Length: 506
Image (cartoon, rainbow, N blue to C red):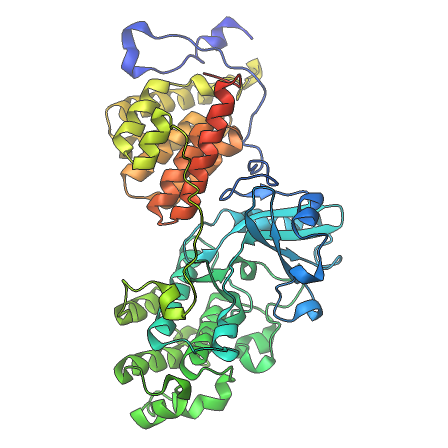
């Protein structure tokens, strides 16, 4: 590489203006590679990874019928199995039929779903596109579905407060998906609502993809499908709201009844206490607030309007249901009537590094100081530029990074975000350090979602970089996903230990 080029590729160390050192970079990566997780067979709890078919075959005991958790058992067209990875973590595996997604490029839609992370979702953590095999891998929810607890309960029905919690949590999940640009959810029903180890309801990520590229968006009885879907076969954001209305009916009545069967009771001018009592689940034995029930019935009626444009938006669902949460401090497992989940702590018991300690304390100031002092030493080997690529645009891009470095040093985090974004958006060079620095800037600006995305992107560029995992840990904790945050902190510590024993960098 010519000396004129290497002179521009030096590190920007605003904190060392007088003793700036050049840092030659090499290894050809011109664009971010596809999302790469840590070894999916052994770890990588919260990142999105590509699994091999042999990994998932081993995890599910050769797809044993004993591991099937689909509601329809072996009769389901696309079976869902529980499985266990080598790191002892349980997963849910959805196995599609051979012809469901013949084109692997189309199945890569799973990557888009895999970018989502929210405490109200049973998140997608990986997929498999191995030969003719097509599988999705998600977090495993051990406490059954809403359908099981509402329609097929054995010891106790779901109390009213828990039904309200289910409604608001699923509304929040739908609003998150809509806000993040994926408002379509296929076949929303009580079987898509799952309960995690703490008894909290979560929306299955599997509904964010259809069962096949050209398949139907609704597999349930046509009596539950939106009227516009029956006309043109297309699902719209308004169709999802209609389906949410059917879930509200399930929560109110304790039965899976078609909207047409209660349309008279749901007419906006006929919602009276007598009608509400006819609709409510008799197993609640009157232990509910009539005022709260009236609000939910009204909302269900609005969701089930024939004209799509007359239905509420996801933000309206959240705004209507949020004030009804009367027991915020009571854990879900108590309200659901299930035993408390006990699990050995996954937070590493071995000594933590300075970065590990800062992340475990969520000390953003200490993390900032560590990233400032680390400079760009971990970017070595992530870029090489040919002479032909050396343009004025490249000079401008590096100048944007330099301005970002000065702003980052001076704790002008919004300015740093803008400058680093200019550098990233050009896309010719990739820098894990820039992604990590912008991730911290987002955290300091109270924006944990983009912070998590940047930390995951840093891992894409440099798959075994401990800092990328540390930053994911902090972002996940900020999103109240504390178990995933602890798993990620543990993974970061493991990678750092390997590195100290002779890995890349120091």
